[in-house]
Length: 314
Image (cartoon, rainbow, N blue to C red; front, side):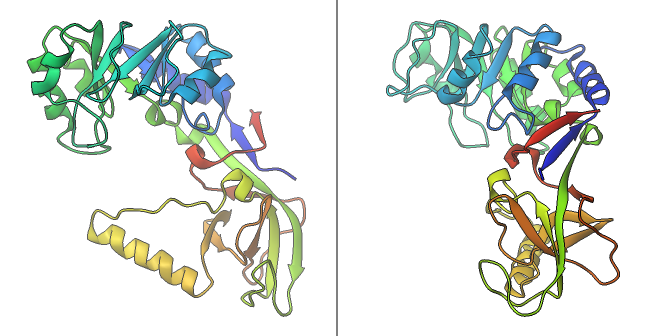
């Protein structure tokens, strides 16, 4: 009665080794541990003999410190209200950070426009103990490499902690370190799969669910609900016409009570029959299906926002 993440450990570890070979790498461990959890990822960092782990926040650093006693790079710029007393923290700073005497990474401004210091402001950090410069780039932007190369040329003898570059691009930047999370931990999607268990199959007459809606003739109750992150979808910001049409289509399906779920029967996504419940979801079944109680159903959801009950290694 659980949502289970199945991990092909050999395939996954092979990918991690191939990815880490030949480059300087700082793995990022944040959020829910990319669906795999902090302890599992730390075990792999140890196996790869890496010396620094990056996290996003000081809260994550405190969580990681329970199982990792080496250096932690905190990527969000430090603020006066943060507890940065841990001597093994590498702090990130920007124009709004307090003055610190410990080693720091200066976050540079990029097209991401989240945090960052302009190159013209680096003179304000001349008396800091600088380990390098953070360059956090957008995902999939075709100007990423040229931007990072320009920074490397501007700071030729400095270490650059850079994100979202390919290994071939990184090889052209001799002082660059890849600060990486998703494409490292989840880069081989064939190594991971997720399943819910069918707990009930029933014919419905009349209304159903918490919303008491009338939109299904036969449903399945499947393990996996809001506690696991099922149905919890972040708002999107469509960047092109196709993405806007997809967003409109999803809204239309919700309006006619046919919102697509992450549960799949073959290649077809099943529609939610009701808003996901805390531990289970109710989905509409097509005619002539062969689902029965105890069957496993494939779940296609973002690992970074999903919390499985168990991880099963095969």
